[in-house]
Image (cartoon, rainbow, N blue to C red; front, side, top):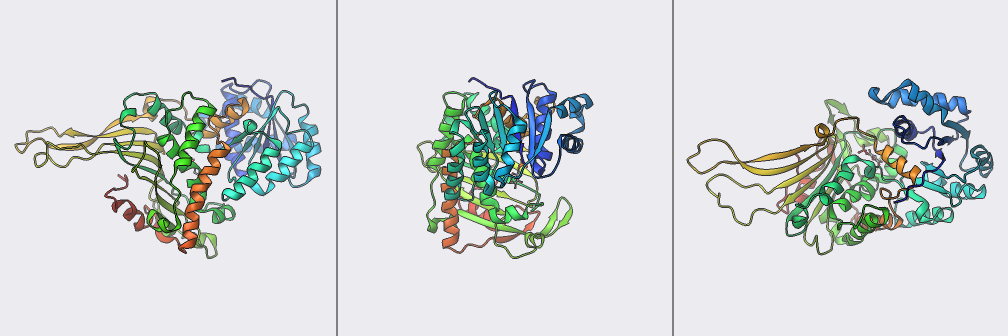
Length: 486
Ligand code: BG6
């Protein structure tokens, strides 16, 4: 596809946490590797009253703090800072936009805007940008989540954005799509021929997707307590992973073909009826406990007030189409869990008949494990003969066939945002989320929330440092399935 790089970039929220930890280090990484257009200028905008020099100082401090040592290079940092300038801007104040437009100047050579701000400001931002000519045909916009808290609010945001930016110029960010290992799912599935014949309900027994985190609320109480695990992680990252596993082979690796196939998966997700929700979902909230050897407080103690927000959710989902009929997709995510781990485990069907029964032990079904983080590997668990002279037959054991991406591909790992910022700057939408995908994701999530409301479901407490409430174990065990927890 034709990539059309822009000449200018505007970062709203330029002094925020995301800018410091991710966006500035990522832009620097692209700069240092000479991937940015030579003449790209980057304008920071936020409420803080900085001038250009003060913002450069701020950015330098962020890079010092958040760049890994092996990525730091004084010359590259100095030339990166040369690209930056700053305009103090209050998105809620219509008078703020004219000075911003003057600072940015001509946008005929293309402008990429990155909007990482509260959704309540989206409308003011789009209108303000439009009024001063910063929303025309040469301007594209990247949007950070949360894009609403249910279908209705997300549609409202999408409608508002559409007033200034057509879908082809709107780049909705799900940072999981920028992760190497997430893109690697596509490489594994569609770059190899041997998975496809068994990649369906005949070959696969169940799919498990886990995103477990050890962190708690962090400094995000205001947002997190109104969101909860279902909106924060399932409505986007987990469902995107599910789509990567479940989608039909796209005809080509481009924005339309890939997103068409993902959207079909989202539209095939079975919407739960309120009466089905209690059997197919488990919610939890972390209590006190120990994580990584440290004593940690409960969610309520961190928050400082009562709350029924879930910090853990497990779901048994179904994709109602021919390929996946009858295959459960077990999804779970939680904060303050035993370990940080994002992983997809695909469990294949058992062999139709075991010739070893009674003479070699129990056969375990094959499992394909795709570990996304903290390590990056793909592992196929297979049965093998244990060496030895056993008179009772041959002794079998499950062993991993290992592909370690960490050791196979040396070199620095890129931040997910580097990929996404580069694609935003160059105009490739393949790894961004289209409107119909977001809305179908919300339909699935809203049905679950409706069920919780109808059944007055409250999260169960689970100790920090565990794998969540025991009911989450029961969710799979009822079907004779065990979570892949090693
Ligand atoms: C964000 C969520 O989208 O993803 C956070 O809002 C979560 O709550 C984060 O911690 C996890 O991202 P990663 O890349 O660390 O797995």
